[in-house]
Amino acid sequence: MAVKRRSDSKLDTSERGLVAAIRKRALGQKARGILHLGIGDDCAVLRPQPGRDLTITTDMSLEGVHFRRDWHPPDSVGHRCLARGLSDLAAMGARPEAAFLSLAMPANLTGAWMDGFFEGFFRLAKEAGVALAGGDLAKASQVTADIVLVGSVPKGKALLRSKARAGDVIYVTGTLGGSAAGLAALAKGRKVVESANPQLYPQPRLVAGHKLLRLATAAIDVSDGLSTDLNHLCEESGLGAEIDLEDLPVDARATLEQALHGGEDYELLFTAAPRTPVPAELGGVAVHAIGQMTKRGRGARMVLVDGRKRIGLKAGGWEHFGS
Ligand SMILES: [Mg+2]
Image (cartoon, rainbow, N blue to C red):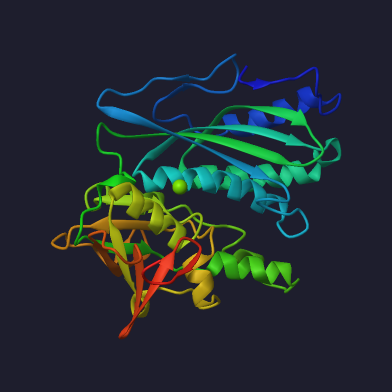
C-alpha cells in the first residue's frame, strides 16, 4: 500500500496500528476528482481527465526551521503542512486532487502529538476537498513533514508568474503581515487566542485562485513575503513594479516591515489587465489593488511610492536607487 512500513527505521512495534489509524481517517474522506485508488496498494492510481493539466508541488515542514513544537500546537503543524502545498495550488488556479505525506518523528510523539497533527491535517483536507492518497512514516530525532500535492487545471490555463504585462494592475487578497506578527507574538510568549493567530492556521485561497483563472495574467502565493514574492513575479515576467504604500492592506496587528517582508501569509498576489474588472472580493476574501507592473527601468526593480517619496524595494528589504 502507499503508506509504507520501513523495517530499517521503524517508529515502534505498533507502526502497523499507526498506519491503519491514518488509513482509516484517510478513507473517511470522499474520493473525488482524478483519484482512482488511494491508500491500500503499492501506489495510488490517478486517472487524469482529458482537457486538464496536472500541477504538482512539494513542501517540507521541518521542526526548528518552519515550526517549533513549543510555539505551534500539533494541529497547527498538520494544518500548516497541508496549507503550504494547497496555497501553491491556489496560486496556479488549480483544484486539489490528491495529497501524499511523508512524516518522520521521534517515537515518543506517535501518541497525542501525532493525533493532533492529523486532526489539523484532516480538518483542512476536508475543507479543501482533498484526499490523503499515500505517504510514509519513519523515525527521526525531529519532526519532518514532507507533503506532495497534486492538482489540476484546464489544459494550458495554469496561472504562471511569467505572464504579467507592463501596465497590469497588481492585486493582493486578504491582509499582509499578520502571520509575521503572530510569530513575533509567539516568540515573545504572548498569549494570543490561537484561532485568531494567522501564523498558526493560514487559509489557502483556493476559491479565489480558481476564480483568478478568468481574471489574472500572472499569480504567485505570498509565502516568503510580499517583497520577495513580488520580486519573483517581476523576474519571471521581466518587469518592474510600483507599490502604493497607501493601498497596502496591512494587518491590524502588523508593522509595515512585517507586511512587506514577513512571510507565511499565504495570500495570493496577482496581476490583471487594467481593463479587467476585478471584484473587491473573491471567494469571501477582500481583494486590494496595490500598484502596477512597470517596464524594467534603470533604477530599482521594485518601488514603494509613499506620497511624493519613492523608495527602492528589494526582496526582503530596501534598496538604494541607482545601485
Ligand atoms: Mg508558492
